[in-house]
Length: 284
Ligand SMILES: NC(=O)c1ccc[n+]([C@@H]2O[C@H](COP(=O)([O-])OP(=O)(O)OC[C@H]3O[C@@H](n4cnc5c(N)ncnc54)[C@H](OP(=O)(O)O)[C@@H]3O)[C@@H](O)[C@H]2O)c1
Image 1: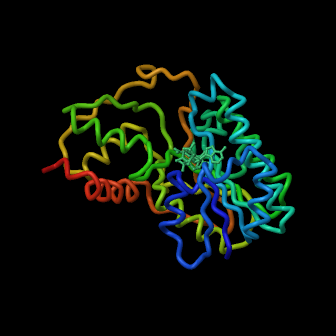
Image 2: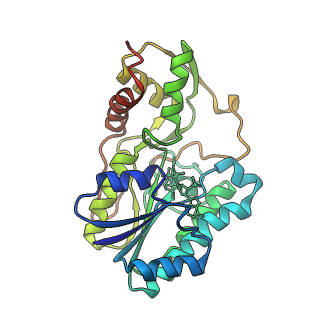
């Protein structure tokens, strides 16, 4: 399959390239294409003639979105709209990635694909608007919701924890917010499986299981690293943010075909192994 990969420099973008086997992927970085410019998007799609436009680009600064909602809507709604429309014009399918933050966190059991979005923040509303635009403009779409994504090159919570553990014997981590930690490696592999199906629609692709709090994630991660840094559970109110987040946003899938990722614990264990290889073993 010929794939035009947008946002190739991000966590998911890098892993789409790293995990790819056999697809002809043309990667575009932010500097190569700004998805908020329709004429440029249309020209890129026409030039590359892809079977699938895969959007791994996004405006991901949840707190900055709260003070600059226009920037968030440009990146997360206008951009995906441009990609979906340009793909449809060129006869290509589109795969767009969205978020657990489209939900309000009121549920106490994992969210599936047919649960009703009710975003709490401008970031969540902008991602929701992107989903709607992608669906409306191209019937051959996949909308993939994921959550709490990490990989060794990116900026993410487990990686920050790793560097905190270099300096501190104990860390205070939020224990009353629960989600689905997701390895970008596993996410990329699951997307590669999904695009083989041709079964267009909305999918939840996130680390499998009943979810984890940030505290659970930290505890598991340090155990996998073999270090004895103490993790102290604290309420989310200890770390106030400008943008509200859902307190509970665990994802599961009831979609058919079912595309399942490994358990979130497996992703964390692999990440611990990889980050040790890359940045050194804290246990030594
Ligand atoms: N990270 C998470 O925890 C998480 C959770 C749920 C859902 N998601 C979703 O998963 C997808 C992949 O996330 P990720 O963690 O891989 O993101 P990421 O590492 O932040 O990468 C996003 C990429 O998009 C690029 N970009 C931003 N605005 C752009 C624009 N206007 N035109 C072209 N490129 C642009 C960025 O370039 P610059 O760096 O140059 O701006 C960056 O390379 C996104 O849709 C995200 O919303 C992520």
